[in-house]
Amino acid sequence: MCVILGISSGPHDSGACLLINGRLLHAVNEERFSRKKMEGRFPKASVAYCLKSEGLSAEDVDVVAHGWRFGTDVEETKRISQRVAEAAQGEGGSWAMINAMEQFNLVDQDIARRLRKGLKELGVPFGKLRSFDHHLCHAAAALYFNPYASDNTLADARSHESPICVTLDGRGDLLSGRVVALSSLGSCSASSDLQ
Image: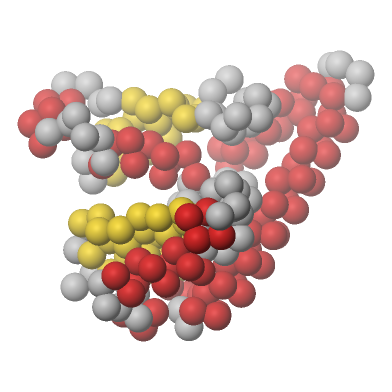
């Protein structure tokens, strides 16, 4: 049995889901327990609900999947550098970008701190944590949990043209958008970032 605990721990909309052998059994947002809309705390109550619903404990979890990759990868660094160069042409633009990156780093540090503390409290070793690109997780959810797609639809898409998914965050800064090619049912890869 393969037990995957999926968690989202802020900066907003925290929650948890439980997959056993690739089958989604439970998904719940922390706001359902805290009664605070868009709750961003570590989803302790959501995790407890998911595990208890299946009679599992933290020791039974094989992997903790988190949809937030810390720091920046090479492509993201290139993209942000290009934005800084473009912004530098306008007055104060480069400082605005530097300030935005500092804010992103503070968010990363806060989420990392909450994850370490929350997993420790649950008794889940931090080594079981796997972090994934936030936007790829949105794209994967669009593919895997699409109620209108059948196995035949997905097979047809794989044999002809890959479906795509466009993800955007609501900040309007264009730092958080991505076009993702869903090349197969088993994988997805970022084909290009939004310009």
